[in-house]
Every structure is written in C-alpha cells, then in structure tokens.
Image 1 (cartoon, rainbow, N blue to C red):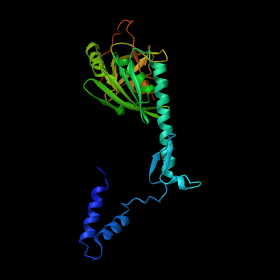
Image 2: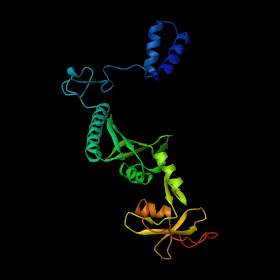
Image 3: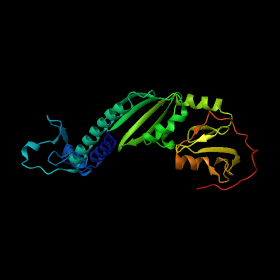
Image 4: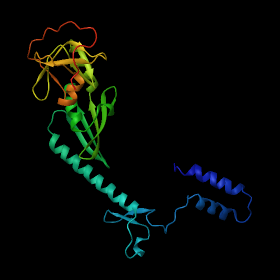
Length: 259
C-alpha cells in the first residue's frame, strides 16, 4: 500500500469538512497540493522510466534540448552501477569458489549477492566469515543454518551456511574441554595452532570473566583466547600431538592479559 494513502485520506477529510464553500473537488486538489501529495509532471526528476537502451529517462524528456541531470537520475544510475558490480562479483565468486567442496551456489540479487555454503567443519567458518566480511554479531542462527551479512569488494553479501549449527554441536560433543568464542568451539584440552604456526597451550588459567589464558610453549607470558584470535586469526586444534597435562584451575586472575 502507498504509505502516503493514510495522510491523503486525512487531508481530503479535512478539506471536505472545512466548510469553505465553492467547488469541493478544487478544495481537495489544493489541499493535496499544499500537503505535497500531488506529483507535478513538469517538475524534473520526479518520474523516471527505462528507455529502450536500458538506461533511465524522465517523462517528457524528448521535449527538452539538453536536460539537466537531477539527483534522482544520478541515484538511478548509481543503482545500475551497483547492480552491475554485484553481477560481476557473483561471477567472480563462481569462478574462484565453484570447485570448493563447501560451495553450493551464488547469484546476484539486484545490488547484493547471495551465497550458499555447506559447512561440515565449524572450524572452517571463521575463514569463510572473514572472506565475506561478516562479523559474528551479524550472524543469525537458524535450526539448520546460520545466516550472515557482510561486504565483499564494497558489495553486500548474504551468506547461508547450511549445517553449521550441527557442526558446532558435534564440536562440543567431541571436545574434552569445550569453550565457545564468537561462534567457534575450541577444545582447550588440545594445543591450538594460530595461522602463523605458533602453538598455544591452555594450562587452566582464566581471567576473572572466565576467558581462557593461553601461552606459547612454556613461556610465562599469557594471552587471552580472544586477543589471540583478534590479532592472529582463528585457532586450529593440533590433533596429531599428545594431550598436555593441564595444571589445576587457579582461583582468581593469574598472570597478565597480554594486549
């Protein structure tokens, strides 16, 4: 429904009950004009139509010698440019990811791109999320998928990660010491390798808020799991190494939280 309709009804009702006399139709028309509810066909830029070439043209433009471009026409052309960039991005994603086992589908939807993925290992999701510019707070969990919105090359991208909730639940079930951070379940009983190759160990210490503190090898410096992920990237469990013997959880805050 036209959002101006309720306003127009009120304006017409007021004009009919004003009791000014004269032509009721004229009174209604003037009231609508005063309320800016009537479109003026001679006012440039109010109505645009697609021309045969696929561009935009305003009404009665054929009578103008050199019509001045209006803000509305500029917005229409910018919209067309964004839609074209979305189509190009969809084609680029298809070319780059089309053979990836997790990739299912991609399509341009006007000025945005829609992507479908099949996530069988929840540890892979942070990399996908980063590639599409999706932050954890933009995720919307559903029973059989997680929807997320981000930007890639300046174009809005909506990603549907199917079976991700089930993959996260499986990770919780098989982890000896599960800890979830920004949607990723980490097994603190196992060493964790960052993207740079450093291996981090959890020795049972946490911040007062409960955030795990990890250290590299046997170094005394400790860093929160959140800071490691923020600075280095998502961690991957080292499954080909024996489980370390963790020390008992200490009371209170132990050691420093390296920035």
